[in-house]
Length: 273
Ligand code: ADP
Ligand code: MG
Image (cartoon, rainbow, N blue to C red; front, side):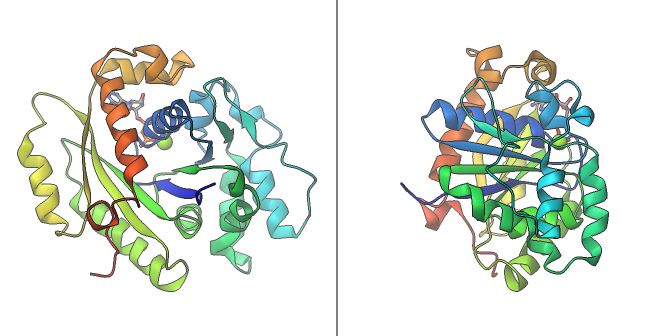
């Protein structure tokens, strides 16, 4: 089997389509026959809810338990926290107890690498692991990036969050220097693009603003209610509206994600500019 690729989907701004993209990319990779694990790394549990768990905060076994066990040095038998989704991928749910884990990490040795220790145990069974980050640059996001080979950055088309991106890229660069030399930017992609905010120039200006080395994906995800609907439809866009524009866009994005690391030269930058 080829080596597992671990990919964080991150942007410290909320509501840019991180969770929706993790779900759709994960489902798309599974449809392409890849073995996929999704990790909800956001105490809000949005991804967990999208995956059909109506009450994440009542779930007794989530990523929080797993991280606590690692911090406490408790060995566990098997991985009952890993659930299977009807669309052919696995996932680990999250809920608000992940917040206290994050707060508690401050006093922990190797606090940046707790998630990496977990993935070192489980990732061998997968081609792709996707991490849905919370909207911050706190310790959970640092854990996610420290465990990742790539970071994918969704950016809302009508809000070129220059400062946010610079900060996120800066964080990624220091994680690369200090903790995880493998980390690369897999790509930036535009989400929620509509006729008024989406122009070719936006893609160009992203490219200009963030340097020639920053890979900007060709796919642009349209703004459409069909995507908003999947948070409660219990289906990814590929089942909810398979013929629509959004499914088409995510199919293209999945293709680009499968190319990450294959065409190294074009598709991923090495942060060391
Ligand atoms: P994040 O994880 O970055 O906070 P979400 O994926 O939860 O973002 O998306 C934020 C909100 O926007 C959700 O209600 C979601 O259903 C909706 N949404 C996501 N992507 C799109 C899109 N391309 N078009 C329209 N609505 C979207
Ligand atoms: Mg989210």
